[in-house]
Image 1 (tube, one colour):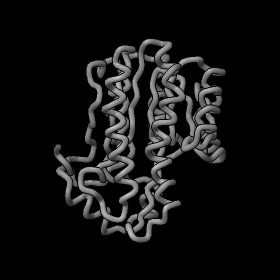
Image 2 (cartoon, rainbow, N blue to C red):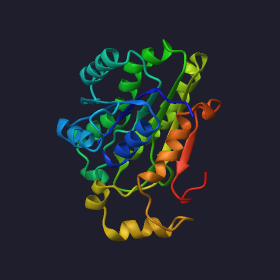
Image 3 (cartoon, helix red, strand yellow):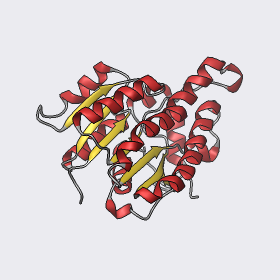
Image 4 (cartoon, rainbow, N blue to C red):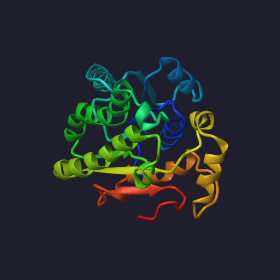
Amino acid sequence: MQSNRVVVITGAAGGIGAVLVARFLANGDTVIATDLSEQALDRLRDGFDSDAALVTVAADLSGEDGNAALAAAIREHADRVDVLINCAGWFPITSFEDIEPEEWRRVIDVNLTGTYLTTRALLPLMKENGWGRIVNFGSGSFFDGTRFQAHYVAAKAGVIGFTRSLSREVGDWGITVNVIAPGLTVTEPVRRTFPQEVLEAQRAGRALKRDQVPEDLVGPVFFLASPDAGFITGQTINVDGGKFMT
């Protein structure tokens, strides 16, 4: 398995992002971990040895300034990007008629515009290397149009379209672009946000009748980031225990 890569993970301090950080560090890669909160990144770093090949960058990636700061930090520490995992996200539960324009714009900015801006900022560092893997996070909510999340579902639909189009533009540089579409993954924010009956319904609707946990996403992401996935691009990979079979 290829190692010694430079792997950028957004939303790295969250429940999914943190297990991805651990997997790539264990593989011998250098991980550039970015999230909105400096304190959350400090907690993430505390979970690893002081000599771990981990660089943390606090930035708001929904805006251009944050992405410029991230790109500058990468050039300082590594000067290339081999793998970009756009994992950052925000998923408020709000009925459509209660979604204010400010909330709509923020959800789109975090989940869709942020993916565009980060990719735009870091793509030159991949093209210079002549190889790259971009893994964007979609959502299983796209497949069933989850109620009370019109803004989030719209953003994740946009991520899928963005991925398909971009994959056709960057193939000449040996860069692949794919989407991981998780089912509802039980992280701490999900436990706080979703009623128990919702989690029970998720389990009942799957072929594999258990909670989905962050560790379920590590293998598929790691595969898409590897040379083994070199002829897979523009695809959406469903990882949801068999809830949706598309």
